[in-house]
Picture 1 (cartoon, rainbow, N blue to C red):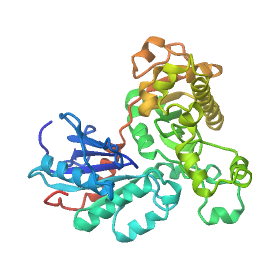
Picture 2: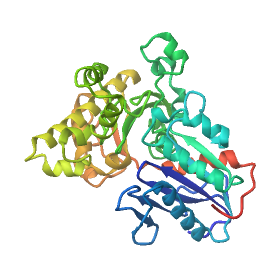
Picture 3: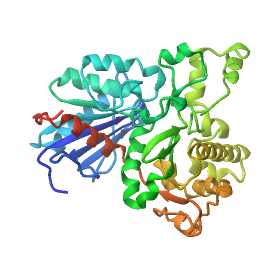
Picture 4: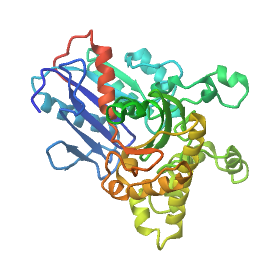
Length: 404
């Protein structure tokens, strides 16, 4: 790829990793593939490393006092080296929670940062780390434009009946509602699926974002009409380490009878449940598949994982009044053929039939020609959506020199 005349950086911050990318910002619509990018992994551990495009993985020695700040400094230096004389137009951040008010990307300042801190309890695995990156940049380079791109924004089209929680009305008035997440991923699907599947993509469509976090989104006309994640990123499907939907009575039991405090329950629900918790071995389906024949817990974890997905797909089919297109995306959805096969087998009542050979090679369409529902595999591209949104916000702003 040729060197751009100006660039935009995208940061996708998790608790132990930061993905980063530079996109060509010379035009209104950035190319779908980044000019350059990479990832810092293992933040807070002795196995921290830096991986950038075209170079081998490098071990990192991050400090123990503020390892996240140190990782951001490593990324800043890497971005500077890659940019050289190319001006940086701004930085886009994937932010998991934008609350009830933010249905569009937001230019960041100290007031906006303070507001978004209020949503940390609703997305503790991601929200604080994106905000930390923004805070560091605001302090170091306040003139560098930053844009927050929200995972909740895509779901602002949900009807009220899908947003409401069956709690006292005053809870709704205070903002307790179902927000939905993985919105950048679903927005990408809403843009790319019509290119591949035509009018079918505007019909009754369910996208399964299956990664370490997981959710389903029911779309009609390319818009979100129902989704499995709700008030927090714990709801809905069983995930890698998160429980998904859970009887609240079980939480009351854990606290009242077993004596767990709020912190202990939070640790269990976010970090010790899901595939890892049930299997007792791993949050990675690949490892569980390798051991299910001789480990009943691995088999049970996989069976429950698939059952919960099939069950929730069925619920969304009822809401949509049928199904035309089922799409798998994200790490597990894109790469785990056996998991896809088991899910599709559970949906046989819909007339869904798989092409085993196409599924094995992760083809764009994996359903058999006679299938009543088309089944597709479509890689996600959250960073490009964030770049696209940010450039829309920064269109009136001149590029900044130097970079971060």
